[in-house]
Every structure is written in structure tokens, then in C-alpha cells.
Length: 323
Image (cartoon, rainbow, N blue to C red; front, side):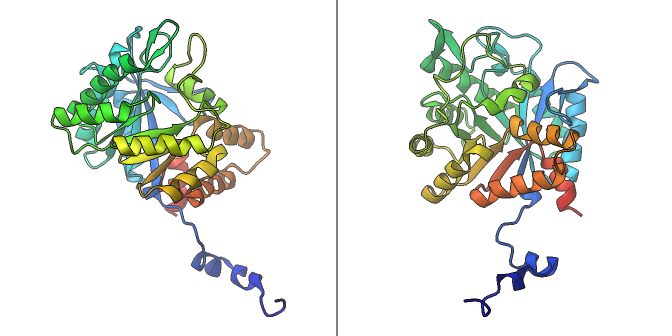
């Protein structure tokens, strides 16, 4: 009771504030996304994501070196192939853009942890995350292609695969395929609770993966559903997921918290493109302090329960944390 209890005593200066701080960010928390494309000497800024680029393999290697030098332990690769088709065949091409990027990055930065997005949307001519039958994505036919993609990434030397397609049963299918090919030590980080969100818009510019028809609501989750997320996460854990992800992060902090409090596995959260671009736009307009908003946003994701944060802010945040 006042005046005996004065909460402001522990807020007096930055020294005591740091000593009692309950949530802390570290560069070890971050995974940085990279978009690799065909060609050479290409570094094309993504108009809706200032500071992010589509890069050819030689440029991605340079970026990976910078990421590692900042103390960020991991990257996740998204591929933009030269040619797309209805079957997304570039996804499992052993000489594909992601496969070659894995090898080049491993040669240049062997201690950088490489994760790959295992999905088809960047590789299909129609932009959907699977094989189309009768106007919709055929779940089980898609599984067969996803397993080939994951095995192809493993053969190239990837450290972890991250299926983001939201097909039923894909974690079990990928786990079985990896184990059968002798890649039982490669973990799976599943996009376990991935919502059909409007926050993905800028990413679709970056990955050139906008659906040519319809949308992804028949396979991604309804943003209104909370309990369903726990069901999806439980399925993925039962099927062999080593890490589970919630995507997006900022509008789904309750889901991150629910997953953290329910399951004893590492929880990742994807601080998605729309969340990033809103901050960058507000900063460019002079309406917000972009740096402070960025750090507050990332702290909120960690406070909600995320062990790992996939974020386009990783390099900017690391520069602040390393001071």
C-alpha cells in the first residue's frame, strides 16, 4: 500500500531497469529470411519491403556473411526460380536455385545455420502451395512433391527444413522421407499454426507467389480461430515436428502464448512482411520512431512466449543489441 510500495523505485534509471527486466532479446533469438533468385550480380530491392532484396546466389552469400558477422545464428531461404510450372518442379530440382544457394553459403559461411522453406508457392505457375486438381489444392498429391523438395534440400546440405504449406499430414510425410534417405538428424520446424492473413502481401511481391486465382483459405487457418491452433500444433508434434511456428506474430500473440503454455517444444514466431512494412512505411512518413517500434514489437513477440523469431528486422535489431 502506498507510500510503502512505490513501484517507481525500480524504474529510476536504466541500470535498475535492466537488472529487473523480465524479457530480454538476443541475436540468438533471430532467423533472417533471404530471397534467392537466378542470375548473377542481382540485388533488387523489394519495393514493398525497404531494405530487403531479391538476390542472386553470389549476393546472397555476401548477405549471409554479414548476417553471421552480426551474431545472427540462422537464415531461412526462399527461392525464386527462373521458370515455374503447374507442378512446381523447380522446388525439388537438385540443381535448383535454393539447392545451389545452400551449397554456396555452406562453403562461404560453414557455421551459419541454414533453414529452407519447404513449400511450392514460389515454384508453381499458379502461385498456390500445392498441386491443383479441380480448382483446389490436392492435399495428398502435394505431400509427394513436398517430400521430394525436403529430401532435395537435405542432399544439398541444409540444416533444417520448414514446411509452410499447411497440408494435412505433411510433417509425417517429410519426416518419413528424410529418415528413409538417411537424413534422420535433420530437424523439422513446421509452420504449425499459419493463418490466412492479410499481412502476407509484401512477401508475395518478394517471392513472386501471389495466387493466380482464388486464395489460400482452404488450407491456411481462419484468423478468427484460436482453439484450432492448438489442434494443429498437436498434430504436427505427433507427426514429428521438432519446432512449431505461429505465423503471423504480432496479431497472434495470444496464439503464441497459448502454444508456449500448452506444449513443451520450442516455439517460433514469424514476424511477417506486412508487420515489417507497416513499420518501415510509418518511419519513412515520419509518423513513428521506427527503431523503437521495431524493438518494442520484437520484445512483445518474445514476451508472448516465442523462443525463436523469424524477422526481416534481424540485422537492424542485431546492430542495436550489439552496441
